Length: 392
Ligand SMILES: [Zn+2]
Image (cartoon, rainbow, N blue to C red; front, side, top):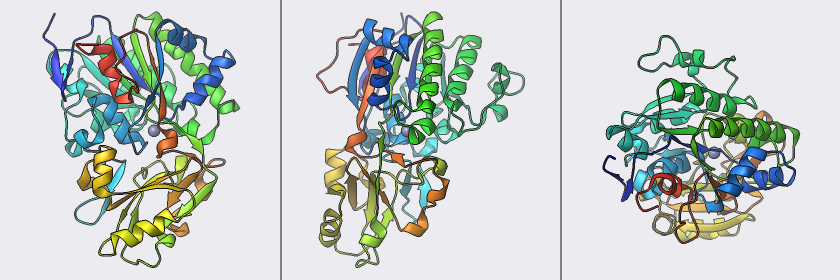
């Protein structure tokens, strides 16, 4: 038995059984509760019954990149450095937070890999691949599987899967990532696997919708395939999802403060999902009075909380240099935009469903094991520790 490996303040051991964590992107607990009620996902229900099923918390803001990185580092955004998918860089340009050199902490995958464990990260969205592959972790994406290979493979990794690669917006792009991971993990004797899905379906379909049912049924079959192959599993979500009836354009609301700049940290290349509208945003006041801007924002319907940079860094465990002078959180039915002309709502498929605030912070955590749980609430960043932690 090798020595446990320290990562960001906790100890992780090489698994005795092959262990996989799946990040079910945007799978709000409501999807699973409804699926369990209707017997739609028997294998996942069985897993939840025999193992562990708790409601945990995502990191805030409840966006994809920060939470995926919290899952794989076991740490909050203040440690790994990513408070959003996107931020205002020091040079005044808005840029994506999607590069390994923007990450400020090692991942559990990289540390276990360095200690000799065979690890693999498979993501549906290419935007996460460089982050999840940080260190020397082998990483591929479903989105670009036809253009990616792994050491020792001839040709692309897409050839490992017995069906054509779906479009990134297809209902089964996530399933393709799980199929790809399954094939590659077998071929490379992977011991610790991380698979990150996409929330394309959850942005478009509520629990009980036909599309959501098709997604969950196929997910259940794939979870069953991993269980049958002897994998220890952890299922977790990066964030939940809610129908959002109201859009507040904070750029317009702040018209009396022409210097103030609204930055939307949900922004990513997948505009069909959410048109860059989420329930949390940054405001950079740029010379305008902070208190007056905050008061204006607090008066906007649907604004639930406005925190200063220091308050947010402290209360939400965020890296202070990568958020706004103000951090704005919305209620369950409200998302924030810049100005109407900055958002192309025609690209959305159906009514807007999105995330980012406290109301999308509840996430399912399902484990095939039954570790002693720490004091509640458990966070999505605890999943690897619950499965592989030295004291778990
Ligand atoms: Zn997500």
